[in-house]
Image (tube, rainbow, N blue to C red; front, side, top):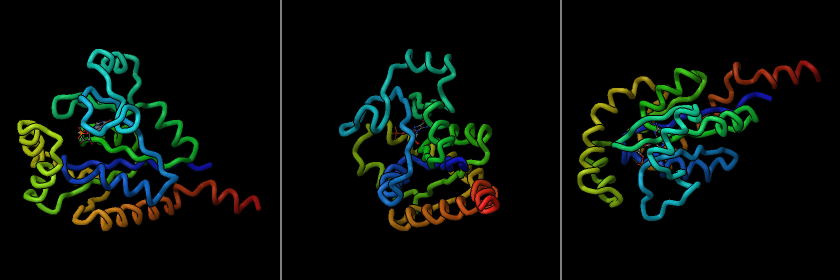
Amino acid sequence: MDQGLLIVISGPSGAGKGTICKSLLEKLPDMKVSVSVTTRKPRNQELEGINYFFTTKAAFEEKINHDEFLEYAQVYGNYYGTPKWKVLELINNGKDVILEIDIQGALKVKEKYPEGVFIFILPPSLEELKKRITDRGTESKEDIIRRLDCTYEELSFAFKYDYLVMNDYVENAVSKISAIITAEKSKAIRQIALINKIRED
Ligand code: 5GP
């Protein structure tokens, strides 16, 4: 069996990564999304084990010491990390997995797992980004400023990714990402099992 795809999605806060991933999962129900561990406090509607595994700084640092993360980073003052064993188990079982993680984390994954597919989501403009993050109403004023301040630097990392997708409309962005996934899965290097099967038949 060929390995599943590891799809890494990053982009500035407010670019719409969460909405895109949700629509992508509706369109491609076999896809799995990795649930990260964070020390950030849950927002209104967020659920333990669905949006994140919420934990304390001490418990997170213990997991770091036990090498439980594929990657982790401090983002906007909190720890966020991808549980290693779950992601590797899914990929080894042929499942495609999405990681929605920040740039620091994505670059660490790229070092360890260069065969991943790295997608950067761009907002249509900084004005629109500011509007989206403010309208979301989930962050404090200071947190909004901190997130927007990071955007300029984050954009300079966009060219480290394999694909840039502008989120002007969610449907457009999702259909572009579906097309990327289809093309990536069709690469000859990912189809060794198929070639072996045809040879055996
Ligand atoms: P939020 O607090 O808005 O849910 O997420 C803040 C940032 O942390 C986003 O850019 C999100 O992609 C990133 N993030 C979420 N989970 C992880 C993770 O496991 N690792 C890393 N490195 N970043 C993450």
